[in-house]
Each structure stands twice: as structure tokens, then as C-alpha cells.
View 1 (cartoon, rainbow, N blue to C red):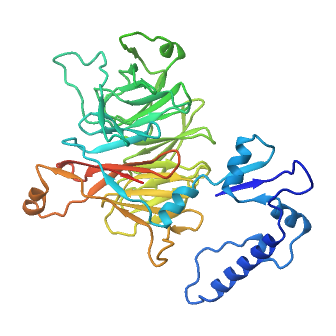
View 2 (view 1 turned 180 degrees about the horizontal axis):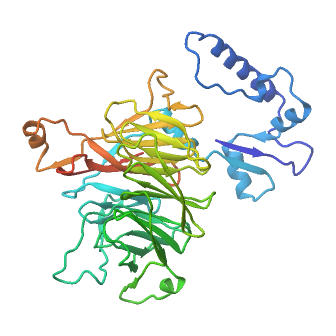
Length: 454
């Protein structure tokens, strides 16, 4: 979980420099080798080898082992004292440990008569914001279990008597400094920006899209990119003077896009993500293409047809630059440098359909259309296995949620077994809590599902 390279303040060696640790290390390595040799009938797909596998270790390696503490208490104490010790921490250790030991338990959330949750983000350690198909922007408090609705913002084209496109809030995105929240406005073709943590309105971005805005991504604290069903990409800017203009009665401004460009060879831009290390925006279209834009010049660089192009609905990027694209029957892993598919992660259940994807360290979390969450271990190259029962993989099965008018109507009249699709999921900052939400997969069914795993 943690690794602290101790630097002695007084004396020659730190307190963790105990010679019996070397013997314990060698014994653990020997036991591990015997365990691998004892199971020749079931060879592992992926095996790692530690430095301790060698019989003789160099003096430099011995010194490093003896001066390195893996005790989390030493990590916290060293951080509190602001010492010169070299500290590192495995950020995804908590989520990996909880998953492999099957410790996640679901708490269903009653959303009343809301319809299908499409997007979500953690605002803090106790609040989750999410958007629904019925155009509601809601904040859920995980401590008090209360639900608060945030008023939608009107653009100038939403005048009385005009047709308003209210087809749901499909995206909620928080900027890097966590001071702004971008989401859909009352009109689904416009965007709205709120101030955090108060959720006071800041501005409405209007007149850039003619169809629903499906996704957005922040480039930095000021610039935002939106993608729409009209196959256009728009660049917006929220200037600092908008944030300084505070009044007793909250008001908001109306802004226009800095730039509007067509995403060539795209039919309906479905998902967006910002690859920070390579300074590029990746866009996914429903006709099975991935499009790469230069984030600094806002110009489209290339488009590539995906090998699996059925129902490409979600896109995620790892810190290293690896793209994950959810399709009907698999999840594609693409190298961002070449856009070549390096792995095709097949679904373990037929017809599940990938509806949401995210990276938590080296674990790819996959939300399906069958009410299940699956976890793919990128380092091992296989689905995450349970530490309690090594013969099975880690799968979280959700509760049913709600369907209207009622589940009896769905089961008896239409003769289908209802399970919710997981349209969105998100981990909190610690990786030890997981919010999942969605609703019925068929477009003609009205219902919702939400759950908190902890």
C-alpha cells in the first residue's frame, strides 16, 4: 500500500533496518515459488518476478531493502513531520483490496419517479451530483440520504412558445481545480456552468449546437469542449471575471462558443475525453470512428475506424494514454500513439453491452447493460480474480431499481426479465466507495436505478 525510503536523522540506519527482514523476504519468495511449482496443471497467464527471487542480492539492493518501510504508519508519520524521506503510495490499493476480498456492499438509493440516470460525479466526500433523462440535475448526500434538485438554466432561445429540446442531461464534468461544474442546460442543445461548491449559476453557453449535447470535457480551468449529435465540436471559455461577479441574488451570463467545428467523418459525437499527457481530445462517434483533435489548436488530426463498431457509446482514458471504448460485445483498448487495438476485452456474458467505463489505476471498471459491474486487471491481462475464491472473477450485481408503471407490468405483459443498465459509475477520491446508476435499457421503458457501494 505504501513505501517509505527512510533517511536516518541520528545514527547510521533507520529503525526499520532489521536483518531478519531479509530472511523473511527470502522465505516468502521461496514459498511463492513452491506454490507456483505445485500447480503445473493450471499455468498462470501472467507472472511477475520480484528482485528477491535471486539467491544473492547486491549490497546496494540489501541496503535499499533495509532502509525501506512498507508500514503505513511510517508513511503517515513521515508526511506529518515533513521529513526528507522518499514516500510513494499505491493509489488504487484500497479499491483493489476491497474488490478482490468482496467487501463492497450495495445500498440502493430511492430516486422516486425520475427517469434513467445518465451521468454522475463526486462533488466531495459526501455529495454526488448526477443528471437524468428527465432533465433533472440532482445532488445526493451519502450521509443524510437527502436529494436536492439544482435548477436548470435557461438560454435566450428558451422563450415562451418555442420548442425546447429537453432530452436529458448526458454529462456532468468538473474542472481540474474543482471550482466549476459543466453540464446540460434546460435546452439539451446548450450547456450550463455552475460554481463549486455552492452550485451558484455562472453562465449558459448557447447557439452552438442544433442537437443534443452528449458529452463534455475540460481542457483546463477555463476552456471546455462539448460534442453533440449534430456532429459538431464547440470550444467554450469561462473567464475569471465571470467568477468574480458575485451578487446577493444569483444571476448568470449568456456566452457564445469561442470556436465551432464539424467533426469530419462523424455521425453524432457520442463521447469525449481529454488526454492530458498527449494534449489531445478524443471523440467517439456512433458510426464506429474515434477522432483525435489537437487540444492546443482545436483542429482535428485524424479519424480511425474501429474494429468493433456496434453500439460504441462510452470512452475513457488512462493516465498513461490508453483509451478504453465500450462496444456491444467487448471493450477495446487502444494505444493513443497509433490508435491500434492492443487488446479486445470480450464480455463474459453474452449480450451484456458495455454502457460505461472508467480507469481506477490499473483496473478498468466496466458497467454493463445487464446490471453488472466487471473489473479488468490491466497488469495481469485478465478479469480481476477473487482472493476468497480464485476460481471466480469479481462481479458486482446491482439491485433491480424501479420500472414504471411497475415491474409486474414489465414481467407479465412484455415477458422480459428486467435488469438495469449501468449508464454511469464513479469512484470517490479514496477509491473505497463507488456510485452506480442507470435504468432500464429499452428506450420505451421509464425507470431508474442508483446504488452506493462501500
